[in-house]
Length: 220
Image 1: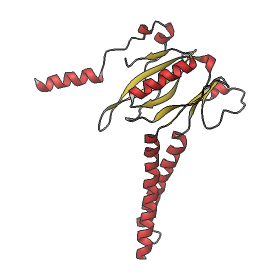
Image 2 (image 1 turned 180 degrees about the vertical axis):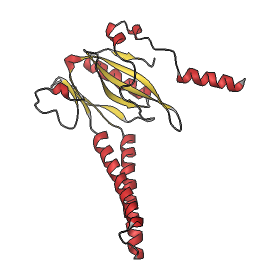
Image 3 (image 1 turned 90 degrees about the horizontal axis):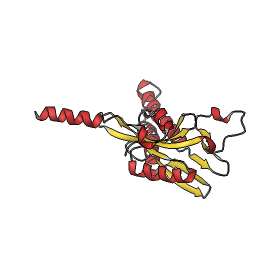
Image 4 (image 1 turned 60 degrees about the vertical axis):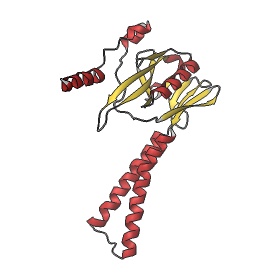
């Protein structure tokens, strides 16, 4: 009986009641998708909202995320330096499969860490002076069709903000929460995706007030 009760409880947690977007009283909310824009996520806060000026705010990588990304880079560098030093000092270093493979693995971790740091620390920028949002360290250059960019939108096209949750399964299950932009054509652009719901809600509220757009929170 106890086992059956646990199975029912687990089913209720992992398969909650269907979400009804009609509660927001907006026909657009009922037409858009309420599934994750991207699969996966993190069980810690990876992004934080920073007010640069009264006219500009940015989502930037959190300290926790920077430590996480740097861990791969430092692990790779440590493996390369440690293995090389131990072999050179012992006079046993030579190029063969036994020595090359550890160096290759160290280089792979360095590459992964470097890429995570580069792309993971790119800011999501909301600029009232330019009247648009973009992802990157520099504003998008002059293009014929900026809408072709994956992370770009003029403020006039942003209809609402959306918060949804996703159960990420692995060695231990956890929820990751997405903050998405909803455009006037129903398209959605992911802004943040991490495990700290309280901070995500705070950042979403600030962004909602900054843009003057409604916030649709499916986690309430």
